[in-house]
Image 1 (cartoon, rainbow, N blue to C red):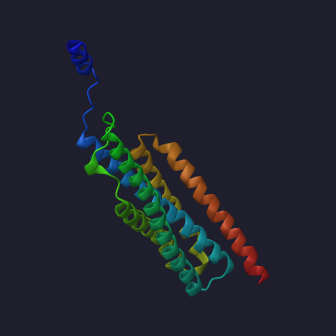
Image 2: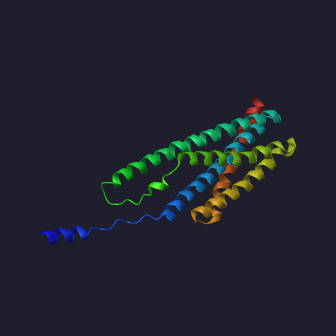
Image 3: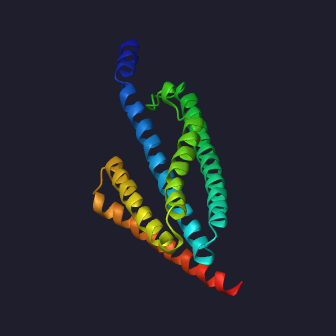
Length: 202
């Protein structure tokens, strides 16, 4: 009987080893991907905002005020969203680690838990950097070419973020960039049309 028990215990499936490098790489890729998405959101949302305002008025001070307010509000919103999301993920990881003490290894490295503060800062900074592009592009050129310059600058920036996103995800650059560019172009066209319509009626 003793021999039988010993054999059964010895036949248990060994705990899978944790690969610290794999955990670090996974967290780094998630952090970079969040940064790219934050930059893309900053470009598209602020581009749509300032182009829409430019459709309603040529007053640079109004466009700047609206763009700056949108940039700050968007960065704070992105940071809060990432913090809440990653905090929830971290709580789940901690719960699984607690469960590990009573069950076989789940493959979670206690030293590689998600960092909500890092995610929040990364998202806010990326959003701000992305938002600066359309804001500068709409403010620097003369009023008669302001919207076309901003439109083209935003599309180029979106191509770059699409390429980086595709590289991180291991997918083809063309489809990823095309989706982002079409979405950004549509957002600007719609908001410019709304701004123009509102500007002529008020």
